[in-house]
Length: 489
Image (cartoon, rainbow, N blue to C red; front, side, top):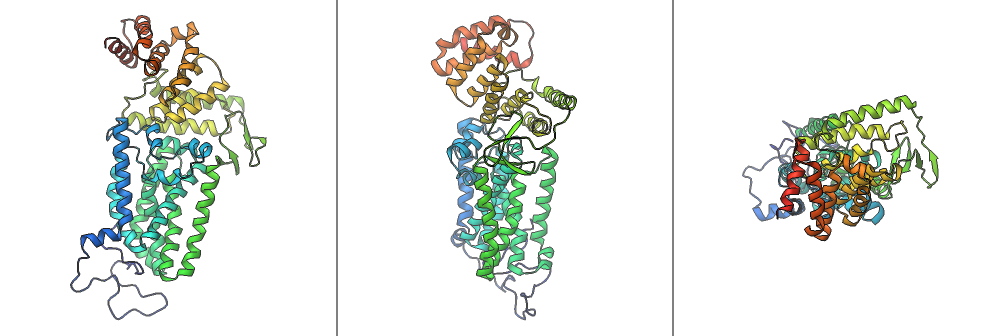
């Protein structure tokens, strides 16, 4: 964004580069335009400058404090990813909390929750420049309406259209708020000047369009899906137009702003009910994958898409599984909770997008790729989503492998009671435990957290005996060393 020219005060007009724009419907003014500096510009003073942008600075402060608290509580640090459970605790959007708990306010509170240090840094650098300028133009009330409505609407639209992108990208929703503000700039300039030509000629508008377009391409290349941030930018455009127009014409501006506001309200209402748009109709996304979907009235109906032949389905599943295996094999069948690099998490995000395409496509895939999805979500620190998919998988393919994976996901969630039950039942299958001895180790971890080290010691001992001192993959060696360390306390 071009910050060389400052935005005008509420009611003013943005000039095109290199000249003055005549007011709509009238000749060019003979006197200096409102945005042109006075002969001897006077500083408004620090206090007045802050008061004119008080909401922007308040938003920044809240977002940074929340990131500090979440980072400190989770131990993620600047380069780590804030776990889902911690982010959820401090207001991040979570599908089940909204659908089952009625916590619709999370569409708004999530705009202040960063998920990693890079998110917080981008928000600080860009929004610290962008927000105060927009607020001084629109005024505090209009600016807050723009920020909240476009941001929350973007989150809701993504939940309706591409919920898998919400799960795989993992970016904090402070980024969504930045896009909402960027998308609003061309609309604001159009609303304040009444001239499409002036909007095209504006450096601010061109810069905003460039950056929104650039990051749209980057994010789409990464996930093959449009996400909440892009959708927030799209909603910010008409909202910015209507709110800025109301500075010149209150009645016309109110009508122009009301339309996108109503759209945002409808989007939030539909997403809060747990619906998503699939094959041209709204369906309930809260059911396990069974080859059937729930229609708008709640009745079961066959999937509207035409299923591919079984051979095509099997080929798609095998290809997706092989791609995921290259990453997942580095961390074992029951991956640890922490210790992943940013590159690992980015690879997991891309793989999740590919796997989700197969799951959501016309393949009648009923849980075959659920274990891969659970493990990829664990690498992404999306523990609640991992637990949800693991529980669904257990209903489709009950058995020790699904039971152990569900227990691990429940432990990370954390739900110690459910984790203990699942892992205890998995432990009853001696053949499975011989094949996946990490079941014993993680059962010990659950018992230690729930009942103390004394209850877990025998399981750590069993794991160290079973694994032995031979050569092991790196992931198993780390678990073995941890078990010995716990026994040596």
